[in-house]
Each structure stands twice: as structure tokens, then as C-alpha cells.
Image (cartoon, rainbow, N blue to C red; front, side, top):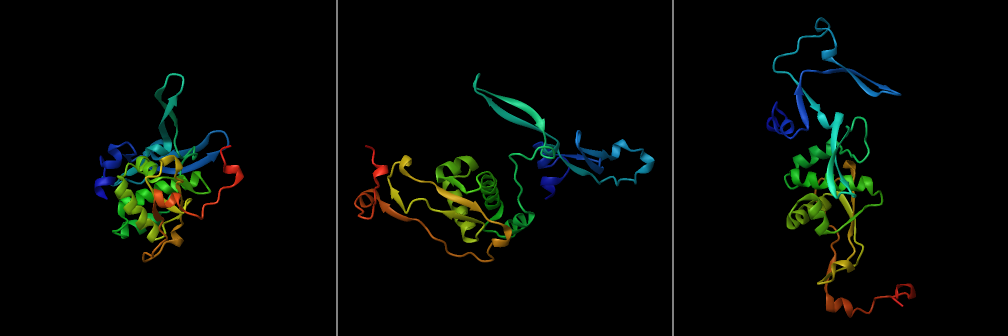
Length: 227
């Protein structure tokens, strides 16, 4: 934890936090000004208790100000846009229960990678309330996880019921064109639904393309015909 949170540590280095002694003493939510803080450095020194030499606060910089990358269609360029932080604008943000973090860290099979994957799916499920439809290939690109590693941790999350899922096709057909496949839908579950021990879960059946084309249980409606 020291490596991550210490002064000049990882979070400071990447610009997510700042180590400071300027402690917030109070806050107020005003109709026009919005959220405002009363800071220690704004008060007379004689009114403040002495701060120990080794004591400091981690200021969450992204909560106050953020730089967002936006794509300008006209010039096809990416530009940086300064905006208010998450204390002032919570759109396109998500929260993860701290119990989830503790649960993942206490389980060696889940760990940081599993927590990261759960958090990503939680973020997407917050946006797509009916579940997030995504293929293995797309999810691997989005998360930056190698496909095999991602699948391994998806299975762990499913086993411990951190996530639920729904298959949108009955079979995984080998050599089927990507455009003909239907992505699986994923849902992030609440901490209260997690399992203490992993349980088995339904897996998609696999079928060759020739066998799939010879099935006699395929029903085609008039609306599906191309003519």
C-alpha cells in the first residue's frame, strides 16, 4: 500500500492524487457556486491544531479538475478539454462498493485482475441497464487484457457470482463469420450476491459449422427471409 499511496508514490506519479497538508475543514453545497470547501490554509494558523510532520492528506485531483480527450470530427484530431472533476459532475462515472474490493483482494483467484475486470463490467452495466452485450474480442480490446487471461478471469467471476450472463445464441459455431455471432450479455452483481465458494455455471455448447447448418430445429419466419 505504501508504494501506491506514499508521497511521490504511484498515485501521485500518474496524477491521480497530490500529497498535501491543506486539509478540508468543511464543505457547503450552494445553489449557484455549487460545491465549495473551507480549507485549512484559508484559516489563521492560531486556529488550527499542529499537524504532525509526517502527516499529509491525499487530494483526489480528478475529483476537482479533469482533462478529457475529445475527438473533433471536422479536423479528425484529438483535443484536450479542461472540465470540472467528479465532485461537480458525476456523469459517465461509476462507483464500486469497497466490500467488493476487499472481497477480491482476499481471494487469490480473483485478485487485482479480477477486480479490474469486474469494475469495467460494472461501469458498462451502469450505462447499459439491460446488460452489456460484448464479444470476447471487443472486451479484450477494451480492457487491454489478453484474450486467454480475460476468459480465465471471466470464468472465475462467473463461478463466484460476481457477474451474471446471458447467451444470445444457443451454440458456439466453429468458423462462423463474426457478423453472424451474437455477443453475450453481462451483468455486474451486488456484493450481497457473491458466493463464498465457486459454483458451476452454464457453458455454451460447441458445434461445427457443418453440423450447425444441418440442424433440423432451425425455424425461419417469413419476416427473416431476404425476399
